Amino acid sequence: MTLTARRVATGGYGADMIKLTVSYAAGDDVTFDHDYYAATHVPMCNEAFKPVRTEIERGVDGPAVAAVSFYFDSAEDMQAAMASERMGDIMGDIVNYTNATPSMQISNVVG
Image 1: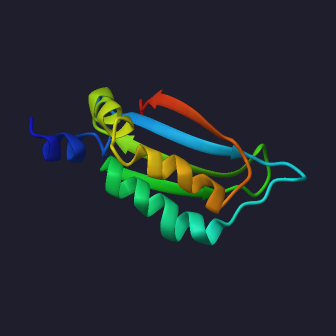
Image 2: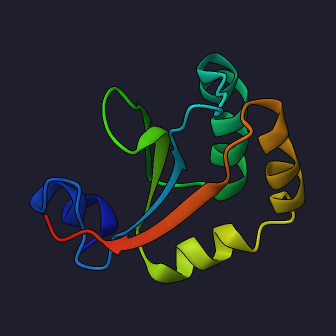
């Protein structure tokens, strides 16, 4: 089955799909520029990582002020993204939109 056929047959979720979520904890002293994040930082990540899908979240109530999820067809694709030569630029850009420390979660998408 081709990748496109698998996405159609599974509603977009392949058996090996990996989701990388980066979240930022909320707190009294946390600052976060959501506009810069959505307009500049996440597009920089998308250009470097080449995910199949990206979702940006703005925290309303809960432990995170913001999060982003990048979806990859396989663990190998995610590992290649993390090895991007742009990773230094991406990590260096964090100070431009927040003083929070990012936290990463890697998940296998099951449905």
